[in-house]
Length: 260
Image (tube, rainbow, N blue to C red):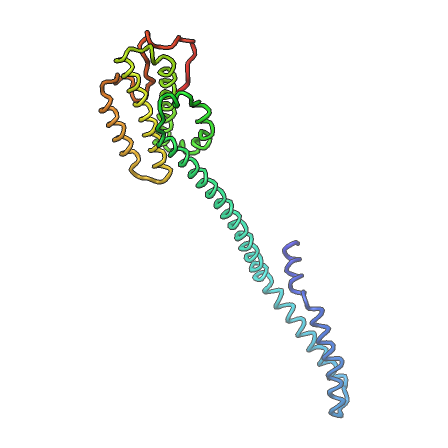
C-alpha cells in the first residue's frame, strides 16, 4: 500500500487546485461570455461544461496515475544521485585529509632522517647523545612505512648504527686514555664505520620518502664502499651485528642486553 499510495498521491497532487480553476472558468466566465453575447445558458451548455471539467480533470488524474511509477523512479534516481554525490564528496574529503596528513608525516620524517644523514660530530659529543630520546619522536612515524621491506631494513640498520656509534663513543670517551694506541685506532674506526652505516641507512630512507627510485642500488654501493674501506675490521661483525671490544677493554658486563 505504501508504493500504491505514493502513486495515488502523485496522481492527485495539484488536481484540487486545477479543478477549482476549471470550475471558475466554467461557472463564472462561460455564463459571463454568454451574457455578453446575449444568449442564455441552458441546461445542455451547463452539462457540457460540467462533463468537460470532469473529462479534463479525470483524464489528467488518469494520465498522472499511469505515469506515476516512472516519475517516482526518476525522483528516486535523482535522490540516489544526490546521496552518491554526498558520499563521494565525503570520501574524497576524507581521502584528501589522510593523504595530506600522510604527506606531512612523510615530509617531517624525511627532514628528521636528513639531519641524521648529515650527522658529523666529534666522538666526545656523540657520547652525550641519548639514542632512545632521539629515536622516540620519529619511531611512531617510521612505523607507517614498515610495509616497505627496504624501508624496514634501512630503519633497523639506522637504529643499530646509531646505538652502536653512541655506545662506542661513550666507551672511548670514558676509557680512551687506557686503550693502547693500535687498539684505539681500531675502536675509532669501528665508531666511524658504524656512524657511516647509520648515515647511509638514513640517506636511503630519505631517498624512499622523497621517491628516489635508486635508493637500493645507492645504499648497497655505499655499504660495499664502507666494507672495502674498513676491511681490516672483523667482517663477521659488520654491518648488522654489534661490534665488540676485546674482553680486556670491554666495560663490565652488567648482564643487561640492549635491544637493537
